[in-house]
Image (cartoon, rainbow, N blue to C red; front, top):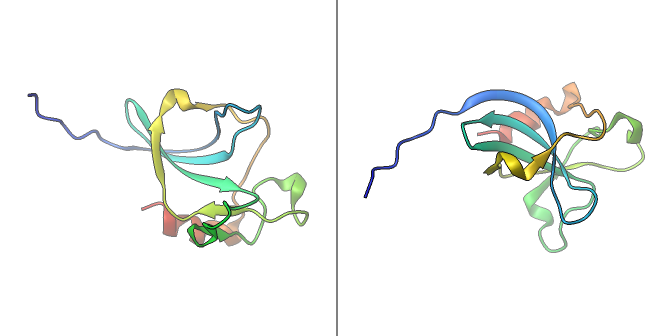
Length: 108
């Protein structure tokens, strides 16, 4: 059996949209990539029922158009998935400067 080699993770900073069987998927912040996969943090407006402790509420919404209307939550654990599981976002997202320390905490 061939020995598995470690892949180097390259830094990248972009928002993508996770593909879903529905029309819309959750926005994600991609911060690392290698030849096949992305490392990313997932954002949502409503955490999964029963798993609220796996999410942290951000101070500002990632969608500037919905600022102050509804809260945004970030999943505390990063995930890894292949490139073809994502598509380009349909709108512009941003991470507010007040939320940067929270995002850095979960990027490890």
